[in-house]
Image 1 (cartoon, rainbow, N blue to C red):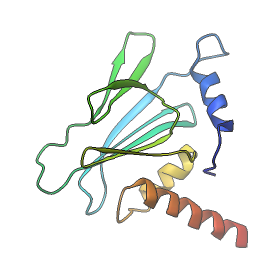
Image 2: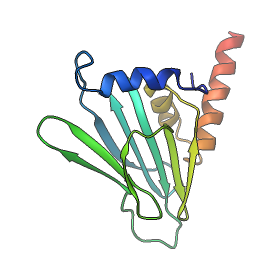
Image 3: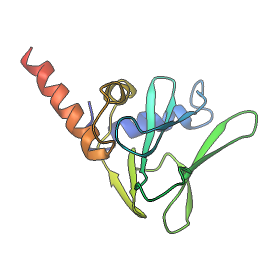
Image 4: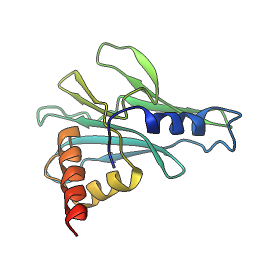
Length: 148
């Protein structure tokens, strides 16, 4: 379930900090947005844990689908970086798990979720690929489970 707070963040940090048990490598996936949306979705995960999601919609007037997320690998570990609209480059993950960049503006959500919830959202072929749509999908699915 997506929830507010930093409880899961502590667990994710343990997975990513060297020396804290077996460290899983960060896997990063880039994909075109499904449906009528144009743009990219980039998500990172480590083992079964969702680390970050970046929604990067592109207006129909734009021809480029270049992502603001890049990676490096030193042969031991993959690292992901996000370039903010102002040009600042930060290493992912950041405090927000869900990130959206629309028309040069950064939007973030403090809610957190699981890899399974995110993949179910993608499989649902959403009309729009935004933080708002993802959270609405998760909230709706959660209510459905509570009534069963």
